[in-house]
Image (cartoon, rainbow, N blue to C red; front, side):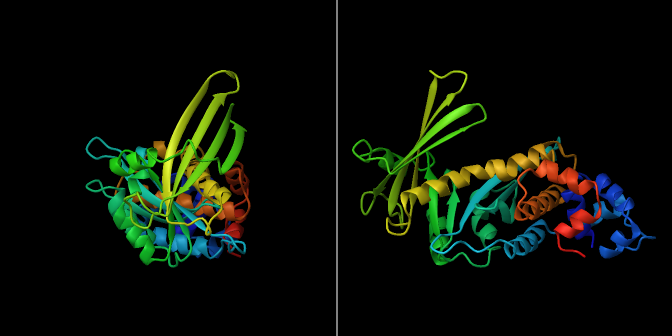
Length: 341
């Protein structure tokens, strides 16, 4: 009851234990009863805080992810589902004696819905939590998993192979031999396989993609193709100044399994998670300045924000801030969004 109530309050844009309790206090009696709340004995701020701080964040994230996954439309015929693995530091959770909490998440690329998340303990890093994170997702067969260079690990691709998943992994200096092998391939003689132009945020960006089969010469298990992505950007107010960035990636997908434009879309989709999820949590929900720091509170609140954003995304909403204001104006609207009638 408290978890569902908290998700409803977060859908309406409420950000703290105190704000959630105020939302509960203002609920009409009939709305409170729909949530299983006795209008005469509504949970207080201290009760809500104690209950949320006692919740297992990984179990909560898995439950929310499973619920959201059932609401995602199936992939179109002939296409593959793609899941992006990415981490985020909860900067507001930092204290004088403890580092900020860090959460690793897996998000559906097409919808921007978080399907799983797990706490990354201060004494470890994202690498050790990769399997634990994806274990929360029941079926990965045929799914394309994208991840940044930190997760370009042999153990990770072995795990994904066992789960029947495909992968696209960025390669950087943390794999120096592999990175050197990729940069040494015959890219100049390789024609562009895909080109895309994007304009927004006061800049224009041209992205080109080249692909090479790597049947031999690349020391990484299951690698079938090497990818070079070149991004050339210029500010619209400085048309003569360009910046160029070249990034390399590898995938186990063979040429007949994915077309160049699909690889480009999945790579671009991975980077877009920053805008679809992290940016919304920081700007709309002010996550980086949240004062919730005790117990598992930071991770639990992150899971609740993911639940709210996911439910709104699946309703076809793109402007989360406007949607929060809309749902704040009528206490029944968050319940209707979650299917509580």
